[in-house]
Image (cartoon, rainbow, N blue to C red):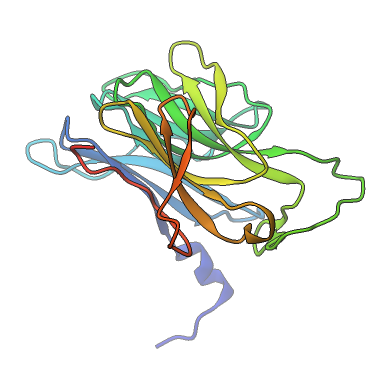
Length: 240
């Protein structure tokens, strides 16, 4: 067996962001690989049919010239939402018709989106996590909580991860919950009436992640499962 060489890095592929829909027998996924001659990676979204007669080799649905991540299907399976960095717009949300058509930019965000959490049950809005700067990058910053920095992310005391609602008709965004904490996951209930989300605790307990439930618009939030040390990956059961 030949020893591993630096050149072998370009043979490595990473599968990310798998998405499917009960409305059809296709699924979408992102494959990431290192770029030759550049300090970065390609992230290309592809589609694959699971059943005959449509089953064939995977087909790329985004270009290597632009990144793709955080794939999510609309409830009817007709639209694929994803994050992409294109032209001079920075990282934004794009919508791609699943049958035919080109991706169109939905948002004009000043903050940095990190992950699309999903569509609303009615298919008229998206849940989006985005990082927002709350302090001057050049000024002093006092870190009074842990963790104040993360491997791969660096110093995070100047930023907060917000939970946003994005309207599909207009691209307008609004905060669903607000405060001195970070949101790490969220999902609307199947009937669209409630919102479950995971957020960091306050004060000296900021390293903990708590489960909260609120109305669909983020109001009247309350903490649940207080005995748990940490909560991750919130999901509703089909009956809510």
